[in-house]
Image (cartoon, rainbow, N blue to C red):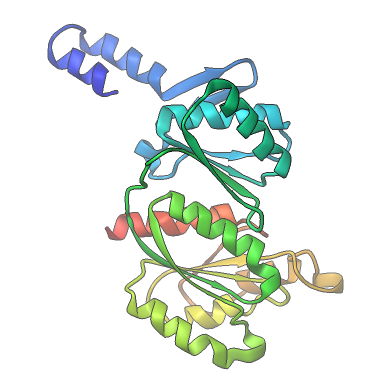
Amino acid sequence: METILKRFASGEIGVEEACKELKRESVRRLKDFARIDVNRQYRTGIPEIIFAEGKNSAEVADIAIALATAKGFALISRARGTDVEAIKKRLEEQNEAFEIDYNEVAKTIRVQKSGYEFEKTGKIGLIAAGTADLPVAEEARVVAEACGCEVIKAYDVGIAGIHRLVEPLEEIVNANVAAIIVVAGMEGALPSVVASLVNVPVIGVPTSVGYGLGGKGVAALLSMLQSCSPGLAVVNIDNGVGAGTFAAKCAYRKK
């Protein structure tokens, strides 16, 4: 993009040609199965995130390396161990200097150039009700950090022992966060409680943790949608990516 703008400024190309080149630069076709949106972060503040589910590991590796080469890093969600191996093998073949961070709990992979640093955008809070909710909470944390957020987290502070919430919530509020993500399964009451106590947006994330009729996150989702605590927004079941990106936009706007 910088090269195109310099060529335009020097008079080497006109407005029409510069527009065409900028459009071509925004989306890059990869073989016959993917189109990489390399400028998404510039437009929206959120980078393109590769959803591994439904793709084979070779495709995941191709997309991740292409995106990391173009942007400095790539983030993969719903990743598998086979994806890590495919990426490592491809990098060995190309002799590229990249680092790989695989979070087995979150099922995320971050591929980045050595020394790459994420631009800081602000702070957010992250609360998880129970240990069973950690995979979704960790996905939200990894995504928010890739968007430039400093994440202040508190895990295992659900309403079964509500006294556990007081100290970490006070720490999060005092840190002047832009938003708080609250992850909960079962009846999903914790986001409503938090929203009733703070003056920043709260993002509720229902998880597929529970028994019987309300299991698979349905009860938690409906409970959060029916909350009488103002200031609570709700994403879909197990959608840590959605929560992390929404919180990051809140942090970006506050900045």
